[in-house]
Image (cartoon, rainbow, N blue to C red):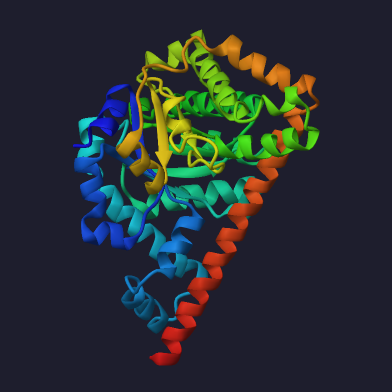
Length: 371
């Protein structure tokens, strides 16, 4: 067992791999990461699936079968991706059982091109939940305005959700409200609240990328001194909001019925700026009751030289708020930054989804031509 990652897990941080492929599943790599690197969950997205399909020949036989029965394109994508997620869920099942459902989770995302369509998102989230058919799957729904009602609806139906693409603190407050409202409705319908789990994925590195670009354009000493501080401050304020909302009387009433807190998840934790420590978004965000989902490169960097310096988040609210106040003072609009990031985030996922669609279409056509 890698000692650095074990120390991170012991500090209350669930380590989830931000990657999945059939190669990882069949080779034993994912099982090895669970056994030796403290990995307790997996997240996926269209970018990850597109990369997996593009590498090697692990999907060739299944693509041939799908082509032979003239499978519709989007149905083929669903089969290919949900098979991987289902098999990963089975690998993570022991972790799921050992943690009473908290970890051992595998996330799969609704089509990004539905991000602004509430009813379609709800329908597909429910469908994915049924198709994967594993208690440890999480359905990823983006935290767009249209996504919020879907989060409530599917939570009320007993579906466990990974709310993704969160940048803004005010949006995060709305996400928590959507989850709590869903739990209240689930309780009214007689669902076992203890079986419903959720995480709220707060994106980290992209905040620094966008704000640092703006700080460099301003160029003053005061502005440049704030580089690399915004993302961690934003995440720390998110954790303060988590503590506040899940200490409320509203949640206490749900907790008495067995409800689980919706844990913050730090996403986009690979460092983009080579001037920064490659483990910065892990070390600086260590705090209990959180998840850190990492690309393998970032995970292995931490396994090699990462440091756990204890809880780096609790009690930092005032200091973190000061960073955002300082950014406003030098001319950075927080509201504009998070609006841009959400819009770009949806666009990036849509682009990856379109790439996945094109890749699968080409594979199916090639299989038909060869068949």
